[in-house]
Image (cartoon, rainbow, N blue to C red; front, side, top):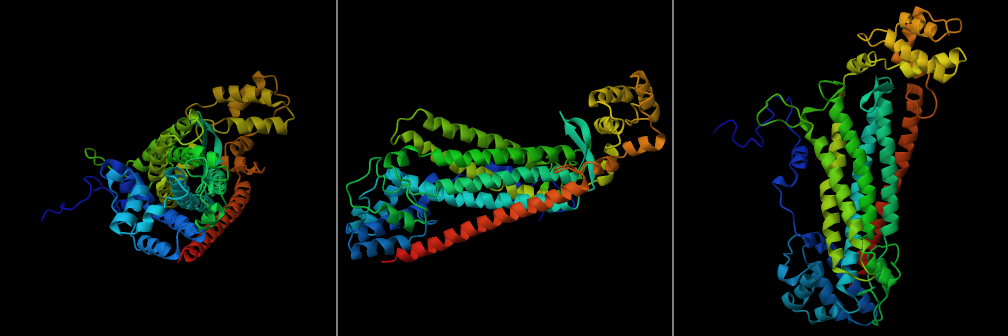
Length: 500
């Protein structure tokens, strides 16, 4: 047998550790993976909505106890993963109705659609699906936020260049940079939690859009499906299909933009030309022709998925834009858009969390980069203005000349360059510097220690920020845990209440 037989990829011989298969699958995407039927993802939820509706019908006298018992036993014994949908029956709803009526021979299966329409049935299925997927994605995003904050803890004194316009700007620290990431992620978590609160209401019972004369109890079905209440107006409950999908997609699109920005940072940091950080071997991919390559494919894929998410959001908003109130078949497409969105983004935070946890920083290279390109020029202008009671603009002009007259080759301000600039601006009598002071001003570590205000990059300020972010994340994770627990308890209560 060849030693290469069974090898999953052609690259990676130069790597010190095997590629993480989760990352390989994430980067390969749909190249070698098939998509399931959309309604296959709804079988579990449609079984639940059928049970809740049938139970309610039995309680209001539309079904008798024996009829409900037959329906309950048939649906509870059904394995959602093994139930094969027949495309000839259009959707999961008719498939399950036919399953009860014709495969199980339950005559009462013909009554199960009393007091509802597929319009409110699919809207309810999608709320249950959204609720589940939203909580999963929120959990994944919280894991990324925690990974970022944990890494920042040990990097408070790891000075590095900060950039504007992709050009060297001012000194900062790796911890300050990472806590910028986590601060954005905390906003995303708050937005996603708000999405959950807004969408956890039940449309079932709205029927085709205009209610029903059957004596239904909408509050009861909402309770049996663990919703917080009903989506009250029956016309709005149907007309707004796709709205909650769009709201969730909007929050995820913003979050994915943040993940894309983090990814771009990592791409640049890990290039040999920056040399600030190294991505662990298990998260890079290789080339089929260039054996030396260590490609950050995960980051490039996340950038593309961010764009794809924005496209899905735009489509979701566009579908509803010109529709008359009531059900329109256009809304069927919203199902595919949100399902594809979740499928594409779900693992992105977890992959990125693994990258951040295993990232290696070259602190010597980062510090050396702070001693080039006159990265301290703005800070020195601030220093001169404060020390000698001058206007910032005058000091800005001094530093413009000092950069010009100092050594471009070394990229550091010199005493001679500063003195020549001060003299040229007519400030020689007011501004007096010596070599030791210029040396201190060329030390990024010393400059950062002067920045102690809230949110600044000094070790002291970042330590306080990390503590606050830990507390915020802890509160959000506690809320998320309580929400999941509450939902789990209510689901168990509902399942018990569904028994005949």
